[in-house]
Length: 201
Image 1 (cartoon, rainbow, N blue to C red):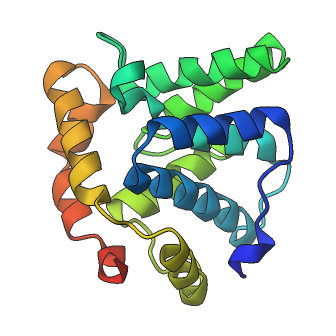
Image 2 (image 1 turned 135 degrees about the horizontal axis):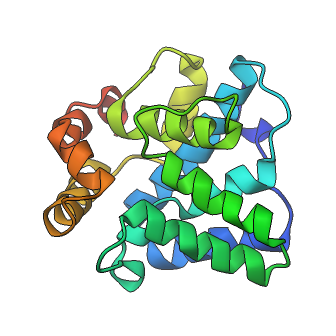
Image 3 (image 1 turned 30 degrees about the vertical axis):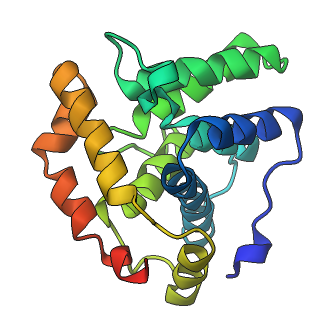
């Protein structure tokens, strides 16, 4: 498994989602987004999962944290819900039908669930475990070590621990009814600081 084996979907909506992520995220968060997509696709391979909508997974991964940035922050909705609606707007504008556009919202919201049943939502499952590896350090030995090292070298973690930690704490304080509060209560700040991949920064 090597980095050059993973190619983003060559579609207008995929390119637009990547452009939005690049425009609104810091380099640290953008690298997190890109690593999360690579982890998700790699988990699909090692777990031999088929019937994946790779374009949906890519668009959802590119935008899964866009709701945490000031321009898309929502006064009431959780950051993943706000980001999901950004994805719906983008996908709808690109010509996706209502059902498929709504799937982007579902995938992004479910990435912050404690767990997702792959039989119910394989893209949501893959995004949840991909971000789980990158944020909380879950299942660090599930993917080949040389591949992990190659990805982190190409997309270093930089100030992810500080930036994402500050962002999710702010969300939890302002919106205690959302998943951000559960993440903070579950020790996500400490998990970020002590992440096994921080050694590769």
